[in-house]
Every structure is written in structure tokens, then in C-alpha cells.
Image (cartoon, rainbow, N blue to C red; front, side):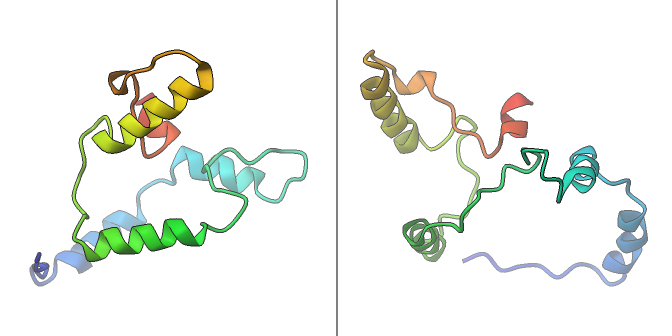
Length: 112
């Protein structure tokens, strides 16, 4: 099991002023300008409209307890890519292989 290493004395205190001086992200600026406006569709953070379903929370909890907390392949977990390829093959009526599927944590990551 991974044991966290404490930060050297004074490091956190030294970083705090620098962190607080960082400019706000551009996405945060857009969100702050638009939050609460009924005439906008909020696409800035990609947040869902509903709480996370229980089966997803339970799967995440199982993965955490199993120690599945490390970086995965850049293109995504192979089993997930295969499952998505099968689903899209059925959906679109044509063969789509997992090598044509990439899973990203967010649209911003995918664009980068």
C-alpha cells in the first residue's frame, strides 16, 4: 500500500502565497460570468444535471478498495474501449474496433 510522504517543513507555507497569486483559469472566468443565467446552456464544466447513480458510486468504491487508483493507458482502459466499440458497432450497424475508440477524462483533455 502507498504511504504518503510528508512535505518538507515550510514547503506548504512557501507554496501558498504563490498559489494564491495564480490567475483564475479561463474556464472559471467563463463559468463565473454565466452561472445563474437562464438564457445560457452551462457547458463550461461538463457537470451532469443529476447526482451520480448509485451503481457508479458503488463501482468507484470497489475500485478504490481494490487499489485501482493508478494512471491508466492514455487511450483508456482496454476493456472499456472494447465494450464501447461493441456498443457503437451495434448502434451504428458497422464494425468499429477498439483501436478506433479513445476514452478521455474530459472534452478539454480530448482536445489537447
